[in-house]
View (cartoon, rainbow, N blue to C red):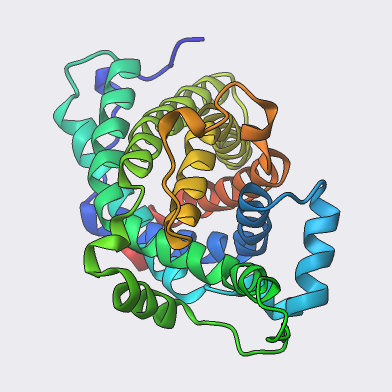
Length: 293
């Protein structure tokens, strides 16, 4: 499928409009999708057989608020990184306007993801620490029969998680697993923007309502790009969890060719499709309204 955009049709938006619209749309979509992300991380790092069993375990031991554990930092991180990435992507895209559309989208996404990963990694690592802290604590307590597990103990906030990581492991430990984060974000962003732009252009050129084109293309690019990078994301979660347990993770120990590498893929696809459909629909609509001019 070829993109229907040519050089003359590139619409220019100011960085301010792009950034402002992305802040609002990203914040809303992340609030909607965060519980699904929490279930995804738990499935990736612990052996829950189904989404349902993982969800029931979280509710039983941590309550409904447990699904939003570690929410604050990821909301800030995801909102800012998404806003910056959309602004950077637009900038890269306009600087590469003399290349073919597919190459322009891919290279712009690749550059955007590479830069954003440096900013986002500490926030994601703190989020993972918050999300699996109760499971890690339960695992530690089970090794000491004289210290009963208390599920009601107050969970760590995102900020406390970051502080705890720095205190225990040092400041630069916030970038543990960075090479996997970089690979996921760079390749993932390249695929993400290329798929979205191509399908959006195709649908609109075939007289599909723009709002539907935004929603469908957003859901499709979110789901498909996750399928492509999910093994890297799982490897990142495993490596980062193991660093918290002081366990080394050789590259050969990651089950790259096993179906277990896709543990949590179902909930991830649901989350990604929902978040990106919501995000792109709001983003495309808000970028042109007078409030953001």
